[in-house]
Amino acid sequence: MSDKEKKLKWYTKIAYGFGEVGSQFSWGMISSYLTLFYTDVVGLAPSLISCIMIIARVWDAVNDPMFGAIAENTNTKWGRFRPYILFGCPVLALFNCLAFLNLDIPRIWKTFWCIFTYIGCGMAYTAVNISVGCLTNSMTSCNNERVSLNAVRGAMGSAGGMVLGGTAMPLILHYSKNSVSYGNSFFITALIFSMISIPCMLICGIFTRETVFVKRQQRRGNTTLALVRSFKYTFKDKNARFLILAEFCFLTGIFGRLGIMSYYFIYVLKKSELIAGFSVALSLGMLLANALAAFLMVRMDKKWVGVLTSICQAMCCILFFIIGEKDIVNMVIPIGFIYGLTNFSGNVAYGMSAEIIDDNWLSTGIRSDGVIYSCISFSTKLGSAVGGAIGILALGAVGFTANAELSKAVLTEMNKVINFGPAFFFIVSAVMFAKNGMTNAKGKQNEEKIAEMVR
Image 1: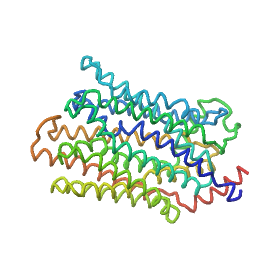
Image 2 (image 1 turned 135 degrees about the horizontal axis):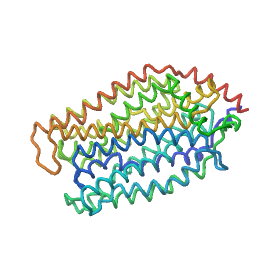
Image 3 (image 1 turned 180 degrees about the vertical axis):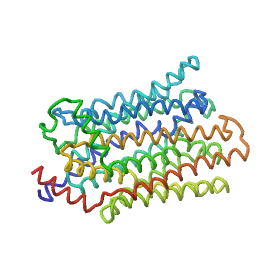
Image 4 (image 1 turned 90 degrees about the vertical axis):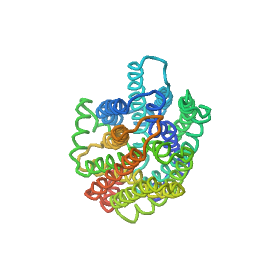
């Protein structure tokens, strides 16, 4: 296969990147503001919020890998994964809005409504986002092109995150007319972002193509047995297990902090207006990180890039704690930029998962791209829920009360929860990345073997 044949068109990469933009606009509000919405608008207790998140993730433990197995066994004229993007994005947008709808009903029914909408949103996100992620491995078998695809995806996702981060809280405050009750401002903001997400997802689904096909004879026989085989070969793979654990720990740190970050600005710093500036700086850093990650990952093994990013993220969390204690608020945006600039985890996970999928395929004869990637996606949601659930539960344990004046001692404990907890998970993630056996050299060897198979 010639270099020219390997390369994807630039506009194909841009179209693919819109899938991540759509993901940002459909899930960004959930990951950043749902906990705040539950405490300050719906009026749920931190312990109840933790239960809702744990219930949702227990269901995802079954739903996510099962969907991945189903998707990788799908055969349509649009491919294996694109149909779920095309037809799943409106459903995701709908549930994204419903999750922020505060109904005037008794408290017990509000709780059930929150569980229903949160699980529904998670299931829709599973179908769409796993499919977007798996497209990388189905669009090309060239590892350098996959790195390029993921760099474009990450850069465009960061740009989308920058827009969302810079406008979400201002929109919420605008539609609430600066009232502490917020009213329907969260729902209106979610509606705006959901309407943006749909055309972005459609661009990704319509203007990309799947070119790496799995031979039908590999999929003959009982469908259930095919799913079981995919799970079996995935979890027997040591490298897949270490990558899943590394991503779970890393994303527990990322989303654990993100889920309760608003409390850091509103209560610890008492500067809610800084949320937009911080979010823009964070997203701008992540935008540049994609180019830096691509540069690093072709020059050193991806697992060491994972170790590097984990350590950098832990150090930034320690600096955020110092900023909160010493009231150095003018440093929170610059450190936020560095926090984003050193976050290479997405690129590392996508790059390593593609190489592990190839390696697993060559060694077993079963291409478990849906299962492996769905486990990475599940790590994202599990990390979000575990980090958020532990975070909000810990905030409640140290004395947090919504819409109240809190003592200095309570604020210090909140500052520790928000920053030291994630730092711990980042350090564990560094260890998991370091133990992974996948290298760039091995990935290159597998790429050459698969190129011969495709030819």
